[in-house]
Length: 252
Figure 1: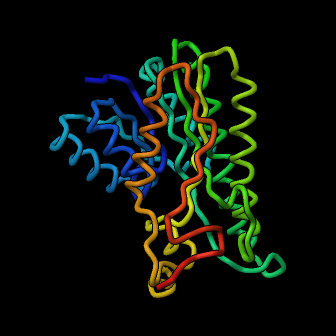
Figure 2: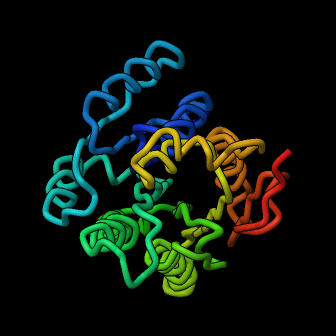
């Protein structure tokens, strides 16, 4: 059984949660982070029951630098064993055109999707560089390649994730750290509900089409990190069959 240590940020729902489950199923020891402490507790209980894995859980807001560093400092010794970091935490807020955008929402997306990823990576990388082999997986989006109306700032943050991923690969060459940017299309998670703030509108997003499920993306992440140490999957774009482009969707 594999006994690597992996950290998953934003583990309380969606892709982060499903990635945590598939890693636990395959014997990984886990450090799980998220803002919703009760959900972390629920997930921890489930993983212990189903896979005899007792995760180390940290509840903090990834957009707050001092919280991030203080929380990670509390498990500094455990980070010596960290081999896999899944930078998953983040999200989208609003679909307003840029001249009508909510600036607080802009700040929140930038702070979580870009700065939060950087905070966690900056703290963990010195530990990971000591390992003979380690892996960072950044959860980007097709919005990091193709912009769409109303996407403006969210798309910009995911373009940044793509650029940061490429820069990591360059800056870390020779360190045996692999870097992968996973770029999903439409995934049926809390994403649209959080973005739109309305359950009915969120359901309309996936109406008459079959989106990806969080588990589909988690399985792809697991495949990437399980390649041999000399193989780096640089980027992976994952669309549901019913989506050919960001705004091109087959609805039956």
